[in-house]
Amino acid sequence: MHRTFARATLRTAVGKVHQDLRIWNTKRYEPRPRLAASDEAIGLFRHWARQFYPPTVRGLAITETHSSE
Image (cartoon, rainbow, N blue to C red; front, side, top):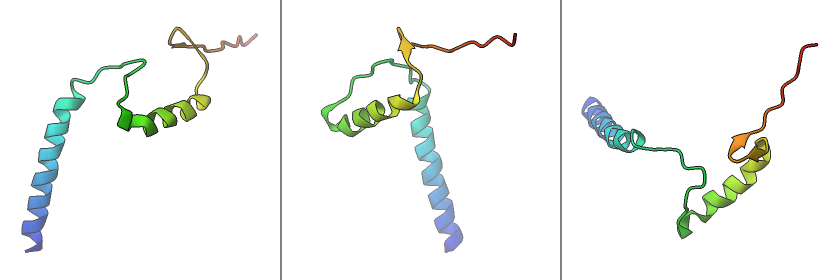
């Protein structure tokens, strides 16, 4: 009984991953993605998380270069 349940669970999980692969393979980067009204929490999280990233200029991160002289 346990083995039958395990096989069914594995088959379901593999099917779900195959469905997700279709989405993952067609994703593309959007620098300022549109959010739906129901995505408010994601927008707030992104705003909060920005403090941990370097400032940007035209979407490109500014990196400091230090010479070894």
